[in-house]
Length: 450
Image (cartoon, rainbow, N blue to C red; front, side, top):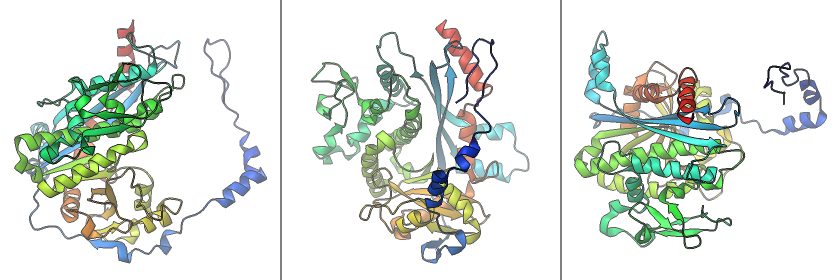
């Protein structure tokens, strides 16, 4: 690593620009490179058995679209102490009617009032200390972060009757089942207690939950927040910080927003639920420490498919599956969908042979991935929620696949590669650019700390 110049008294010393040849010419390094597994070239792919032809349904049931996305940016709180940082997160839920989008598409010129109809958006904001910072009423970074997340869930409701923390309880304790809940549905096994040094497992019983959605720790007498089930306490480090939780946190909040909106529709207008398409930015799964949430999510998806034929889809914009989709685009004809099996994933996309019994990502995902080439030749990686993950899924295992693909094709956007209009729009409305957003937020934080 190079040296920084803090006091403007010495020249900046960057890392060496000539040392790479020591690595390139090292026999051990060369041997490691030669041992790396290389997936088969795309001219050796066997796709025929996995391809499903796209057949648009005669009647598209979707009358409204809700897209959810989130983003964040980092700011330094003290220029003289650059390792003191916090992150500002922003989330958006964009709602518009299908007929409004159709009218905009048909118009020769798009008027500002036309776009205004499509910008019916709710924004949620979270300011999260992430390194060398704590609240005045907390003694640690961990305690500060866990409290920040809990307060965010407690204080936001998207202008609905219930808060996000209330919806989280509704979700993990399966309240939607009403009188059909099992005893297992009424508890949550938390792998690590955030209030003890040992961090032993603790069982959270719903009947012991306080009205403020906390539980009393039997060992310390302190409060365990309901949001501690995300288990971020396991990866927050008092010295190196908590930047590692951000991707997991954004994904979790996006999911809870979707669940919150589904819940409100169930309460107010349940018959509309089967006419609304929910679009999530990213795949359908929970990852890292939040992975256990995929289990109640799978339960909810099964219940929603049984009762309301839920329409939900995840759209991936980056990663190994998106890279592979671009690589094989010449192998698919327009209007074809490639349903990815475990054998295909581990042969052509990911290293390793996978689990011989359990399907790919069975401890985190609740949907299967499909590579779809639209009739206009756009490539999309689509995640479709399913009742049960399988090692060799077929079209029968993917509920509402043709309806979902029909809407993915209709919502295409030429702003970016493989973009959908609602996702691109909500991203534009909530994303925080490095400049000028980062500088503005940094100035705001510094002024309020002064």
